[in-house]
Image (tube, rainbow, N blue to C red; front, side):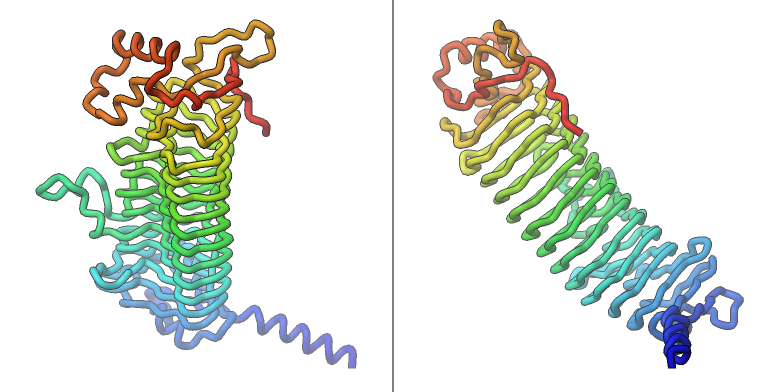
Length: 423
């Protein structure tokens, strides 16, 4: 009896692993669709190098589609290239290109719809309307893919000089998903590089999102997510995180996001979140906080930005602590005369105070809001006077006798030396 049970168990393991079906242009099975017709759950479809133009490939079985030598699956600019409607599907090592385009449908290079435990990894997606699209899915993985869209910003000017954003979809798009992992991808030339809407308990880690038409990352109604060690570079409007609670943002780089409406990161209606060990380098605005509450901004670097932090009066009970503000044009700008937030123990490169008792903190509080910053926020034309002697004199006078800038917005313990992050 024991030997019989062992035999049955080994047979189950063998059959559970499934068979391998090989597809190539010269093989007996020369189409992916034909392989899917004969495949069973658990099978592997090995796709050899070649060009495959098969319209829309619909995957409704729990199979693995694995490319050898990066076979090209081409949508001929007519079709959604691959649609997955099964659980436990692996897509690996394929070039997926030239999807169709529509004003009423979200046509993607590859779309996963109502799936669980699906993965796409080590794929190249080129010239698709939407890149990788997960809808109403759980426990998915998007890993080590290269996703290059057609939305090159220098060509996207209408006759009136405005960007045509609606003509392009997102690189990685997740809608109503849970427990997702987005790791190690390079996303470029889409509308938004990475887009989350109603996505819970998910992680974005080690990605590069650059030169996208609008946002490198766009986050809406997505609570308890983390993004860690990503780089968002030269995107049209930077990064936007909106209408969300309990977000963890650590070790990311926000850099070279320049433009009248561009930010390192826009925080709109964010609650109870944490920003830690991020670098904001050469952005028009490092952080723009609009109705952001009970959020800790700690141990970040703000370097050579136009505005390091723009924080509106409706943002309250935030803590800005142990950050380094280095060579920004304006460190902090606000539209409030009050200070509903706490600034403490930050390093400000333009602080001119002394430390007579040698405790590492300046003896005189630092006022991060300058009078010229206040004027330029309300009268943008005044920006042409930046770094003039008149502005220096104006700010010096206001710091000694504050009348217009918020008198309570101070850092009572400014650091004398740059804060060294703990590892």
